[in-house]
Image (cartoon, rainbow, N blue to C red; front, side, top):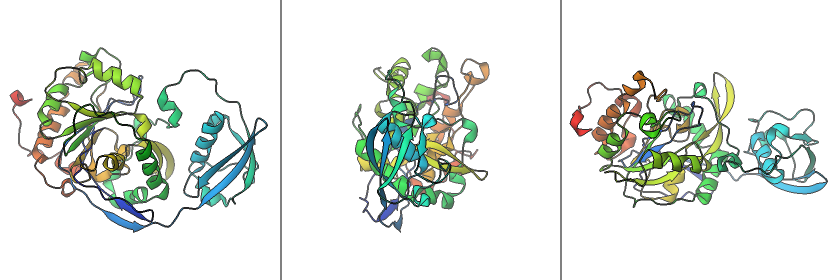
Length: 379
């Protein structure tokens, strides 16, 4: 995923600075049998909003446990969830969460994954026993090591509909720490020199058909048109191996196109958050733009737009998100008549000169029937 920033302020340990950047993202349909789609980002001017909230120091708990007659230790924060505890145990023992039986940590049954560790009232030095059979040592998709569950499209959440509620995700201690951790381990291979604005796009392909058949109509024309105004980043909810192969097959990398991809991120740059829908809690992974803004200070909430067909990916930066329709069943006549990218190009060109994207409402403006038209010859 590509993000555009013009400035970035370092965060102190006690302060949470929430920035909003507009980024456009397009990815392959995550409901397809071959996995999640790809996200693209382009450079654009973005609007940024900062909210400074004092955050107290986190309390960490030192735990000791035994597994297979071996002694282990781990540290976990009050703001972490039971989900994170299981992930830590998995990383230490290779016992997957569904096989873990944790004895002696709490009285009775272990609470659900969304329960906060702080609510368990644990004390440092607490001992427990882990029982479970580890996974084999077969070759794995690198993204699986990150313990990031995939969620179906029908569990989507529109975070842009309630920005105030979205602040609880942005100011959550755990999420702030996860952004810092993801920033530290971010390893970016710059494919093309960066400029000062970014577009992140998601639904560009569908299914496992030959590239010419699975690409969304007008894909290359769309990228060529917006490239003069945006840096393009691809952020995919799949693994790098699959992503690289797909991008090369589509001619988006290594070809002689009038646009260039600045860099590519995969599933390992995402992390899991806990959201609510109809009163129920569920987990899903997110694309936190702050990770990119921390790494590349020229991009920020004012010049980044994130285009995606999954609103939940905007959980930590809802003001930067533009949700477009998913692209499915690429082999059908209906899919081939899809013109979503033509409309997206029109909108991206229309806002390209905006000084601050945070002054825009992508959700409303994108569906404005009075946007200036773009001649077919221009696309």
